[in-house]
Amino acid sequence: MKLIYNQVQFSNMDAKNTFEYNSVNYKEFLKRFRNLGDSEHTLIVYAGPFTTNREAALDELKREIIGEAVIIDLAEVVTPFEEESYANIDECFSSIDENAPLVIFKNAEQLNGVYTGYTGSVVKYASPQEKYFLRNVSKIKAPVVLEFKEFDQLDRMVVRKSDSVVLFKAPSSFIEKMAWKVQNWHVHGSHFLSPRPH
Image (cartoon, rainbow, N blue to C red; front, side, top):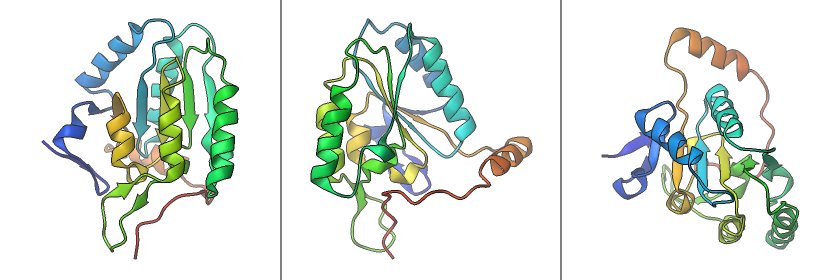
């Protein structure tokens, strides 16, 4: 079985822990999350353009923990400059309370894997910033969520390192589509994203 969304392909190996929001597998994932021990590390990826459902899913996780989730915007941590990013990541991780029940990294697309150098490539490779981040994120004792706004900002390293990847497809019903369009009528800021090569 292969899952393909917006030209991002998850192979059989990657797909074992990859599932859609509100699916049977998602409900199983929530059960497992409820049963995690105190400060038990697990890496969770939320990815996809349906912001309403992504936010609802984050709220579900927050309701399952005791205490406040730590929320960090990677747009303020990761830059195009490697050494600066490494220092920022170190500082960011050292500031996280070791008793934090959940850590959520917003704008994970800042980690910015890059596409191979030919037109139409669907394979991304991890940036040095992403590799450094992923090497160090396992030091966080609590569950960690990486939130990506689009499927095409994921790369295989993130998927491979993750314990669960939850996909948030664009809405399909007319009412969902209208609500989604209204919500997305704004100008997206230009961050450190990697465009597909032309």
